[in-house]
Image 1 (cartoon, rainbow, N blue to C red):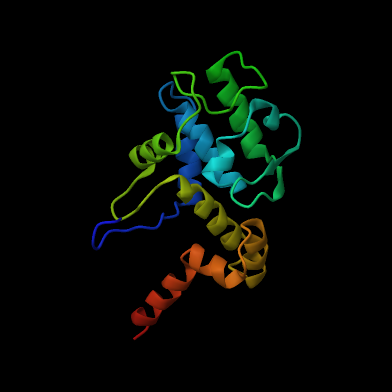
Image 2 (image 1 turned 60 degrees about the horizontal axis):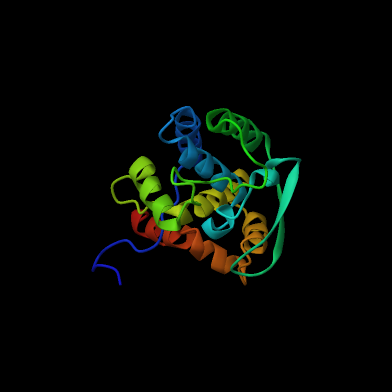
Length: 189
């Protein structure tokens, strides 16, 4: 249960500033793991439960396939140049890796937990009046796709397919676009 008047949905982050900050943190021995998780998350749009299932072998090649935990649907993810470059830096920081190992292992040699990821994201990327969590990565991806396609309905339709939403209207709500449009009404008076 959330506190009265508190933000309960995850906020999206500015893609460019998040990416730039993450690329810098990728060189920091303390934060390089969460930095790579952030870079990967904002570039692929997977849920955190699916990101935490990825292994090093998934980063080999041009793409990888996942069966989404929530929907049990398959999804093929292309590995873009940003992810490739970040992964190389990530491996340099990790040292020797086993391809069958999960990508995100804690110092205790356990896979990151969602709670741990949320805490680290809030610490590193949180801002006043923003609720930053692992879900922010997915929303940031969605907002980037929408903005890159000139905030088109076509982008919302493609995102609704990627996100397995029932309609582009659901995606519009999910990304907070509808609320922004409603807020703009007040500003035009």
